Length: 146
Image (cartoon, rainbow, N blue to C red; front, side, top):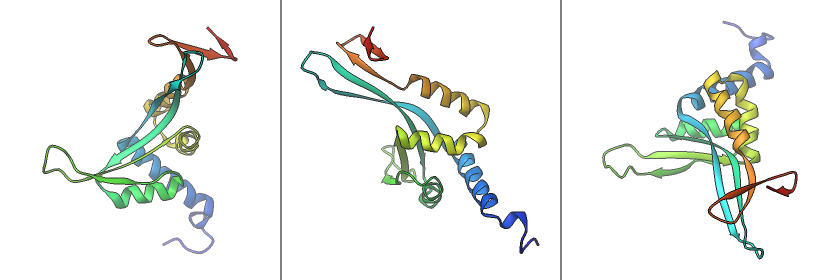
C-alpha cells in the first residue's frame, strides 16, 4: 500500500483523479448543448435571441450527482422528477449555462474523448447573440447587423 509522501497523496494528483472521474461520468450521462433564449421585442421591433453553451447531466442516482457537483463546483442538483410512464426510478438533473458551462468545459475537456470534444467545439461555435425580426434571425458580428 502506498502512503506517506507518495505522488498519489499530492493535492494535484487527487484533483486530477476527481476531475477524471467527473469527466467519465459526464461522458456517459451528460451532454453539451446550446441553450437558446428570446428576450421580449425591443422598441425597434427586433427580438434579441441569445444562444449560450449549456452543460447538463441527468440520472437516477442523487448521491453520484451530488459528488459530481461537489467536484465541478457549479450548479445544483434538481429533482427528483418522476417518470411520466410510471414505474421508473425518479430522475435528478443538473444544468449550467454560459460562463458556468464554459468553466465545466475547461475542467473536463482534457479527460473527454474526441466525440465529446467535437460536441464542445460545435456548441461553442453555435453560441452567439442574434437580433431578429422574426422569423429570420440575423446574427450580430462585431456590432453590425447582417
